[in-house]
Length: 99
Image (cartoon, rainbow, N blue to C red; front, side):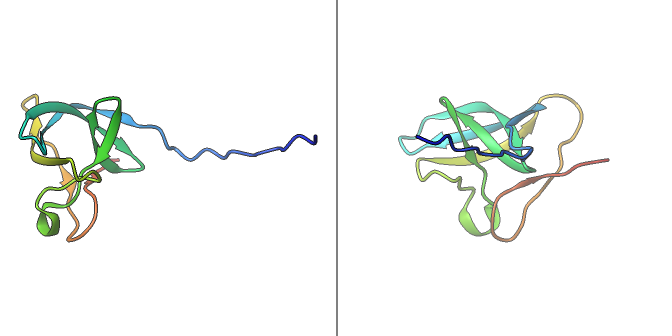
């Protein structure tokens, strides 16, 4: 059998923890919890169980996520610094880079 060669390019696809910020999420069963926020390719995610859910814009989707089992309530800075993110009319929240 012939070996297949697969080339993987650097996609910058890792989930990177956003320091000093958390998000309050609520499950379908009504349980609320505070979880860490991560970014991947500038999209914001909440850490849920052993995975992640993308945070949707609150403008059109009522603070939804990429999972129908969770909604987000509030994004909370854990220090005295503010936190900025982009909220498109439709789609997922994006991290603001201050480079």
